[in-house]
Length: 102
Image 1 (cartoon, rainbow, N blue to C red):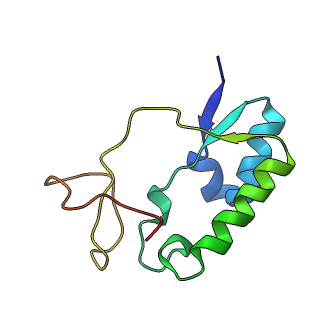
Image 2 (cartoon, rainbow, N blue to C red):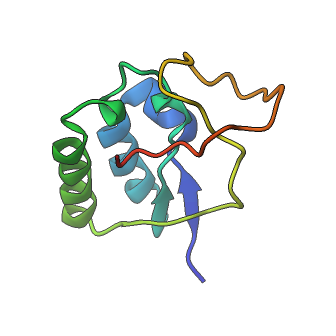
């Protein structure tokens, strides 16, 4: 069995790279990359540089020997480009799944 936790609130406080390091240092086998903070159209995952960013995050994870894993069932996170920031409270079914890779 693998012990995994989400980057969740750690990334908001320390940034995503430091969150991954802290999760590893705490003794987890993996991290679940929380994407809800990247639902804004201005986020790095919605930019043309997303591949460079995720490759750097992957390189960090590899360097500290931690896996990116799924820790829970999928949350209903979705938005269309231009809809604004996801608030976590869906008032209607999502129109399209959020995708970090276009």
